[in-house]
Image (cartoon, rainbow, N blue to C red; front, top):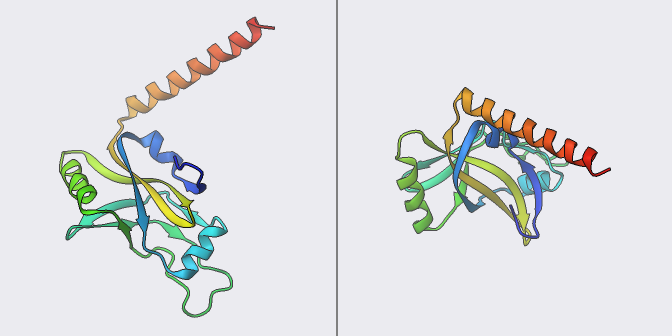
Length: 153
């Protein structure tokens, strides 16, 4: 999570559907109307993912709504956007994603010192029984907290 940054949008479903192995912070190449739309909080990370092509990382499926006061030069909401990482980080991502079953998923979008950043995670998909275990674990923790609160009254 960003230190002192303002979170624009989070991909909550990613934490439910994937095991998160490692996270990276990346910049993102945007147009002016996209930044204005993000300042209004109009973005969606659901169904978005990142791919590595020709030694560069791109995010696909991320929806940034068109800016209301934009003119004919307004952006395409679902365009492919380039992520800004250094060569060492890109090489590390290439090595991690070549393993079977790993993918790159954006977890959140936030402002940091006036710049838009993406929290990118190397993830492995969960099976249905893994999701059920997580739900059972969460319910058990909630029940314990409720009983402890009752007991301490």
